[in-house]
Image (cartoon, rainbow, N blue to C red; front, side, top):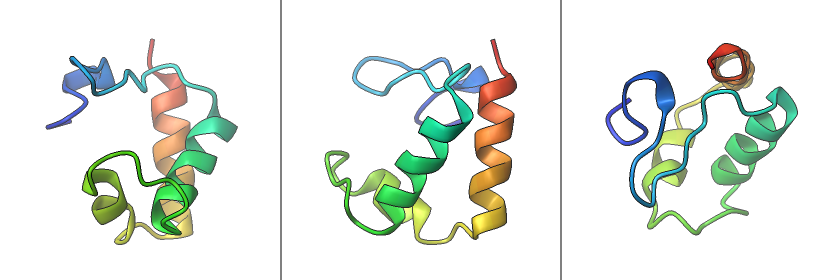
Length: 67
């Protein structure tokens, strides 16, 4: 919530992730973790390194449920 703000609503160049589709969030987090997606100055890449598969699925479910 520090970068994407409370409710994951986004700010400035940090995108809104609230309400994003589950499959999209899973793919983006996996791409950050695998260092396939690197357009974030390393912030999400660094965070994603510590996420398990279950963490990624849970985050995707949670953010998809937000409106």
